[in-house]
Amino acid sequence: MPDGNRSTLEIVGVESLGVRSLCCAVALEDRRILIDPGLALGYFRHGQHPHPVQVAIGERVRRRILTLMEQATDVVFSHFHGDHVPLTHANPFQLSLLKLPQRFHGLHAWSKGADEEKGEMHRRFCDLQELLGDKLTLSEGRSVGPLSFSQAVPHGRSGSKLGKVMMTRINTGSGVFVHASDIQLLNGEAVEVILQWQPDIVIAAGPPLYLERLEESALADAWGNALRLAERVNTLILDHHLMRSQAGEAWLRELSQAAGRQVYCAADFMKHPRLLLEAWRDRLYHAFPVPDGWMDEYAHGRFDVEPFLESALARGVIPPLIDLRMIMKDSEESDPRPRGA
Image 1 (cartoon, one colour):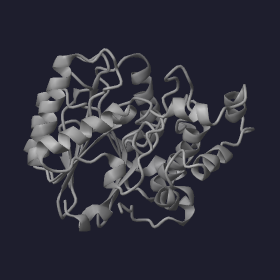
Image 2: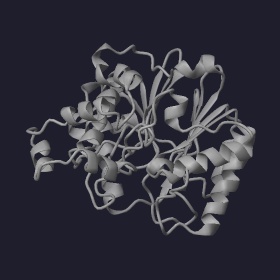
Image 3: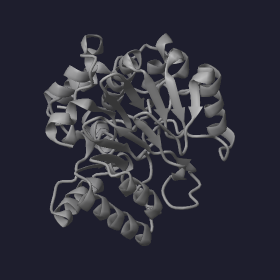
Image 4: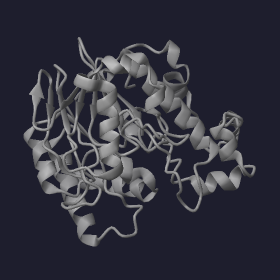
């Protein structure tokens, strides 16, 4: 999709922008589509909880998602993990289903089914269904207007214990955008579906390099599938699990070299500084120690994380956030059309 069409796409939250998410907003002439409106911060990683700097960024993303809900006509749920949907029992860093704008109740909701879901994932689907009622449509394999949805594909490799996800195709009128959710590039059949959709721009979760259990054969599959996409899609954006470690940056750089063209992370595509805050957690705790009990205080609204972000910016521990602030912080003043540059 050429630069002139980037204004139809806003990548709202993702790991290279500081949070666990793959939330995107797509503006069409007569519709505003919000995909996977959820976020998380990686509740316990490197032996540590999220640092207040990341929490402050998470607050901005959460506010932006809520603003986009107020503007949306449609919402899509690719699956029911806590970084992709609002939750009834959200932790302090996630998006609560109980605190959504009234407009959410009237949105056209397109969702993966829950037939194979069990336990907590099934309960999350039921919570959404109870709130949205007949506005929620089971969408796997369906096409309605500019929207098309895949059958459920594996979250990672075939047989993954993490379940399945639904991919979304949107005809924007000037091209085709595909949101491939948590495929991790580990399943060739999912990649084949994407290519059959003939997209101009794709955003997908890359392989979870941060997991030590990832096998060499899985890495080889991800690399081969990424190259297939890079060679046949005009604009390829790989992020989410890939950017939970700095190894993802090197992998993306090497992939771009092998493909002979740039493969983006979300921050690069959005022309924002990279904020791999989960990967930088050790660095943040070393630079900015926190008082004991701060998380409990934060959960009760008695701990301000903003001074930590201001200090990190002032000392250059994280890059300047001029664009990010413009888009996310003063959300009540935001343009109703999502901005991509």
